[in-house]
Image 1 (cartoon, rainbow, N blue to C red):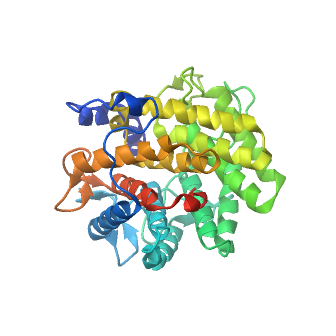
Image 2 (spheres, helix red, strand yellow):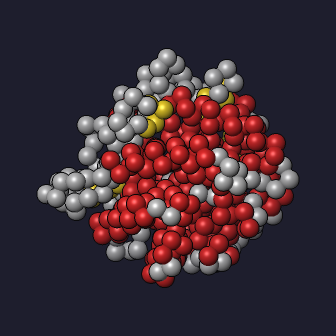
Length: 399
C-alpha cells in the first residue's frame, strides 16, 4: 500500500486542497507583485512564542517518547504505528529550526539529538549503496522502498546539524556524503530515454518518474558538500542535476514542473517546494562558482514564485510542508541579495494560516478543517514560524 499512498497523496494535492480556499479573500495585489502587503504577523519575539506553542502541540499529540518517533497523523486512524521517514524528516528539521531561535534555542539541543538518534531507525545499511528506507526498519517496522528525495531531505538536515554545531559533527557530514553517493546511484544512465539523465524519484519498480524534487535537493546536498570539502566530485554532479532540471522541467512561466515520465509526458504541477529547491541550488551554485547567471536564475524563480502563489491565494491550494521548503530557500537567497519581499511573503502566509486554520484549543493547524491533522503540516508551520523568529545573520545555517 505504500506506493499507492505516496502517489495519491502527491497527485491529489491540487484538487483536494483547493477546497480550502473557497470563499477566501484574494491576496492583495501588492503582495502578488512581490511587495509586502496586508497586516503583518509580528516580529522575531512574537514568532518565537508562536513557534514554541506549535512545537508543544506537535510533541503533545504526535510524539511517542517510548521510541522517539512520531505518528503520521493525529488522531491515528489505523495503519502504521509511526510516520514514514519524509514526515519524520520535516519534524526533525523543525526541531532544528527551534534550536536556532535566539534566547530559547538552547532548550531544544537535547530534542535535536533525540531526533537524529531516532532517524537511524530508518537506516538500511544492508543495501549497496546504503540509505534511509521510507519506513522504520525491523524490528520496530517493516522498512520500505527508498525514495531519493526522502534521503535528500535527511541529508540536508544532517548538513544543517553540521553547520549548527560549528562544523563539530563530522558524523553528520559523513552520513550526508553517504546519502549523496546514493543519489548519484539514482541517476538515469539510459541515453534512449526522453530527456536522458536526472535522478529517479524512487528505487521502487512501480515508478520511473524523474522529478524536480529528486534532483534539486540532490544538487543542494552536493553543493553544500563541495563548499565544505572542496571536492570537485560534488560540484560536478550537483551541476549536472541542476542543469538537467532546467533543461527538462523549466516551464514557460519561469517555474518548474514536477516530473517527466519515461514516455516523455510531463506532469505539469508546479509545487512550491520545487521552486524552492531550485532557488536554493542556484544560490549555492553562485556561491560555489561565482557565476552570476545562477544568482540571476534564482532571483527570477523567486520573483515568479512569489507572484504565482500570491495570485488568487494559490498558496492555499498547496500544503504548508511545501511552502516551508520554498521559504527556507528564499531566506538563503536573501543572504546574498536582500529583498524584504521574501520575509514579507512568509509573514503574510504565516499570519493568514494562523488566523484561518489554527485550532486554539489544541495548537494544531487544521488546514482541512477537521481531523486527522497531518504531521507534515504541523511540522511545516513550525518551520515557518521558527524561521520568522531567526535573525538574518543566522539564515546561512538554514538548508
